[in-house]
Structure formats: C-alpha cells, structure tokens
Image 1 (tube, helix red, strand yellow):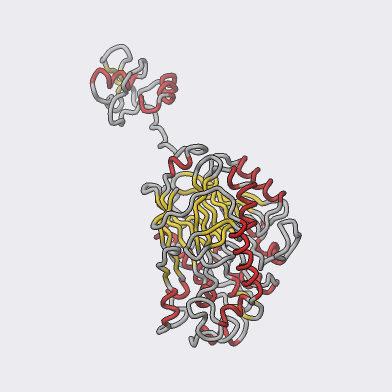
Image 2 (cartoon, one colour):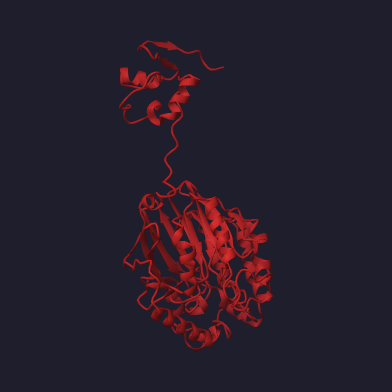
Length: 470
C-alpha cells in the first residue's frame, strides 16, 4: 500500500527514543496551555479572529442567539428528504467512509455550540446517496471535560443518525473520560450516552467488550463485509484480548481500526507512533494482517505514515484532527472515497457548517477553512485490494450462474461443482468438456448453447422437446 502524492516511510521499527522525547515534550506543552485558551490566544490560521469559542461568536443571527445562552441538550429536528434513511448501495465498487475527529471545543462547559456538529451529521445524511456513504467514525474527544451536560448536548446531535438508522461509531478520548484511566474505569457520563445500549439501535453494531468502552461494527460495501474496531483512549490488556477475539471470530473481514491516539504528526506531514500507539502496534496491529488502515485524532496537525506488519504488508496510519483551526475545527469531516475498481482511496476534508453559511458571508478566515487542499488534507492512497487482502479474504468472485434448465438434478450438481462448464452465457466453451453435462455436450458438438426449452442428449446431437413446466 502506497500513498500519493508523497511516499511516506515504511518501517515496522519502533520510533527512536529521541522522537518519543520530542513528542512527549510537545504533548506536555500542549497540556500546559488550556486547549480553549490556545484558540483564544492565536492557535493556527489566525485562531478565531475574535475571542475564541469561549467568547463572542461571529456576528451572525445564529451566532448571536447561540451566544445569548448555552444550548440545551435538545435533539435537532429529524432529517427530511434524500438520505433521511440509511440505505447505501452495498454492491457498488465505490463507497465512502466519513471520519469526524475531535469536536471537544464545541462542547466546553457553558460554551455549548452544537451547530457545526449538527451540520456535519446532516451533511452525511443528505449526501449519503451522492457519495454512497456507508459508515461514519468519530475519533474521540467528543467533549472538552466529559461533564454530563456536555456529553448530553453532544449526544443529542447524534440522534440524527439514530433516527436515520445510520451505521456509525463513537469512541472515548482523554477529554471524555479521565485521561489517566483505561477501559476498566467503570461507569462515566460518556459510557451512559455512547455505550453499547446506544449502539444496539445501529445496524452496524455487532458487540462490545465487557466494560462497554470498546465496540466493533460491520458494514457491507463493494459486495463484501468490512469491520470497524472502535477502541478506547487507553485499551487495557483485557481490551486487546477482546479485540483479538473479535478478529478471530471474523477472520476474513478487512479491518479499519479507530482509536483516539495512535500516531502523532511531524512538521513534514508524516507521522510516527506515540508510546500508546507503539504498544498497540506491537501487541495487536502488527500481528493481524486484516488491519489495513488506522485512524486517530488527539494530536494536531494531520499526518500519515505507512508501516509494514509482520505479514510483510502495508498498514496505513492516519492522524485526522482539525480542532486547532478556525472555530475549533468547525465540525470538519474527512471523507474517504474508496474505489475498488481503481484500487484507490481518495481523501478530502471539508466543513459542512462553513460551506452552508453557518458563519455568515464575507469572512475570509472562514472561507479558507471551508474545504482544505493541503497535501495532508486532500490526497490519494493507492491500494491493490486484491493483493492486500489475498492472505485472509480473496476478493469475492462473482456468483456462478445457475445450471441450465435442461440439466437433470443429478447433472446440475455436477455442473455446480465445475462453475462455468454449464453456463451457456460463457464467452467461450470449456477447454475440456466433461460428459454427461448436457449443456457442455451440446456446445461442444454444435458450437452454441441449447435453445430454451430443449435438452441436448449427452450421447448425440439429437434434441427432444421437453414438456412445458406446470
């Protein structure tokens, strides 16, 4: 598996101690500065231009109303029109996976601004047919503090997906649950809102770890089933054992692994495993060839790399996060457009909230954020799917055609075992006809398929009229 336009490092080696130290210092520096304060004091892309999400919103009617009082945890109106119900084309070789990273600055204490998240979820539903969106994955840090009011406000927006019967996953980030805990932490407001009880309503949900913080989902696309693992911020040894069991029970499914933190980015747009990601790679990813793509948030800016697993195959690891950008990321989503015929995944990044005019007009900073075109935001990943999945799940072959009507039941069984030998629609006759398959015998002697309603004698070219079916 390779990436365009820039080829990324391919190595299953552990990152150097120096690189680990640099990333550790980077994370400590970020933690020392309030994440909301980071936006207020500048951040990237000119920060918020005014006072950040904790201060005044841009001067729009919607913004003024939202600034007047915190938004109550009320579910938005149901989606209407196209895409209101989740019915993707499961046979098409082209489909899309939507990815939604850290939305935490939109749900921060009294500063509750659900509009960007709502816009993104509505976009996914409205564009489901055009892009054939089959799944949406949230990468954690849904909220800033994991407080019940924040969680409830965010949870209310996801009812849009619940009502539509959408296939989606959400996982816990270190701001949704205590950051020094793993998936054995017990009950939290996050688990109450985004635990197994919620996903039991989703058509993609297949199960969870006993603690409820790790889930797995399947969806059908391109004529085959795919599996999504949504792992906790800190997956315990028990959680990893559970994940191993999931893959053992589904040994032929390609797997997309999502977690809040796996790789951190570097200034050149590449990425490297963080300490937790290195442990997850060593204990799980490298040994499971089914995992071909990982997605995580947590760090910024975006980045990606390609490592080689123990089977000698590529695994793409992508960091997706835009919370440092204008308006806390403005609910930005990334779309992974999978094209099985081209052996490619085309990636694009956009903010439906800004594209829909959520921040008004004449806002140059917002306009720059509507659709991102940088190398880390818009790119193509080349994947030879047949070769990559050959070790555990060969690309599904087309179903064999049914045997001709003129075959007897006994001969139908023979035909079924030889595939196209009895298929009169085959482009050419079998190389070695095997009597007594009647259609094959007829074809080998006449050069054409038997006429409808007639049978070829296995011993001669004589034909007999069959009685019409009752």
